[in-house]
Length: 96
Image (cartoon, rainbow, N blue to C red; front, side, top):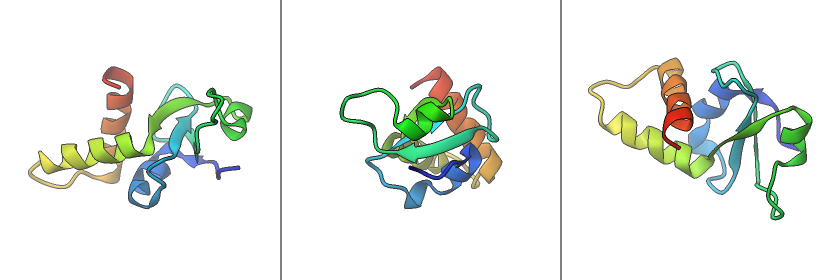
């Protein structure tokens, strides 16, 4: 079972996470939402850890990582950890 942490902590660790894994988080999504990073079950649906905690699909790690990397490249200065998390949440809600 994946370790439950805050979504902001997951976003802060994107570079070190398995790119094949998926992020699941409790809604409504905020930086304080409980989140877990797990491999998506081959049968589909939610992994047991995410289901037990009432979480929903958020984004695949590789999508989150690539989005943040591309977004940061377009900025004049590096965003704070909070700004990075909030922008990724907006992407997951509005564009993914």
